[in-house]
Length: 478
Image 1 (cartoon, rainbow, N blue to C red):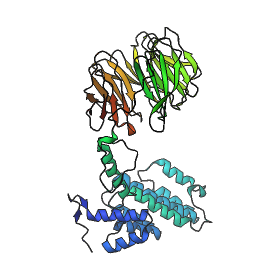
Image 2 (image 1 turned 180 degrees about the vertical axis):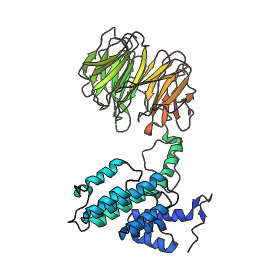
Image 3 (image 1 turned 90 degrees about the horizontal axis):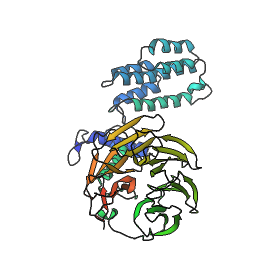
């Protein structure tokens, strides 16, 4: 028999006894009972602690007094944990008395033994109702296996309540391995792969996983391209231009793009596009243009919103693909909410509202994030009306939201990109710099698997990708 006190690993951080114990538990959970029993015998280490085996024996024999005495003797339990464990045992005792028709003894358990426990009164009240309806609590006199199954369930519940080393957290080894794998992925600077991660070697993606070269140039527009955005399912790309058009591109099986529709009915430059979450509709607008809603399948305009005097800077969809908001750089217009049938639903406006430069809706539809000409970022809870304001030191030019809706980035005319968390836990932003921004509106966006990198345009005619884990720009793309 090997000593259970030896430590394992190159750094001697792994307690051998604990390691073998979680392996045995893993074997049991995977259904390899014979292997688990064999390992217990060979190592002399039991998956269950002596204390828990004593509890199991008491519960199996319905020796409730001994079970309670064992729980009271256990060291290292908080008052709350001990009370929760005692309640589970007393509950079982109570129910078994009910099952035997011993209502007076069951009532005694309820009144004398449970009354002093620090557990919610609602739990005790639920048991009291058991005097009237035994089946509602899971027992049936006509079920011969009912008591056995109920005691087995009690042991499972105690395993969840009692702390290590009395018990081992369920599927502990799987959890530890998964956390180790996730840590490697989290530290992988170039991680951008949907392939499963192997356990046979350490995980590390090389730079080939990261976008680093131009594969196609789209030249169908006849003037400056001001905005591009892929559809949510990745099947299409939309681009807008100062040539007064927007183009919908189809992504082919080989990754190349081909023109699907040219959207012509704007009279002035188109500066912004937004895909509906279901990718069936596309919004287009311009700083001195109306807002238009297009059917992606047919390429036809379904609705026109506003008029020539309604200066729209940006728009964003709610997750139901039925409602959207648009922001205006005219302070008197503010922010409007419309539906896809052309009806105005709500508006936020007033003489004191600054110009809206860009906005976004979180994937859950709960938060409206807007950037304003006064250097403020405002995060509005659409349901409650509560608002959080983040003030930047320099003017903000654009806003982009991560795919999971937990983070957003803003471009500043100070040639910095700031990344903030929407929950408001960060006291300061993560910062990225190196691109050039002086005169024009430069936009950045999240990209890659799980929004793991940021890409930004630049006034030096290059684009700059950066892995968020690395925190610095990679080689620029010409």
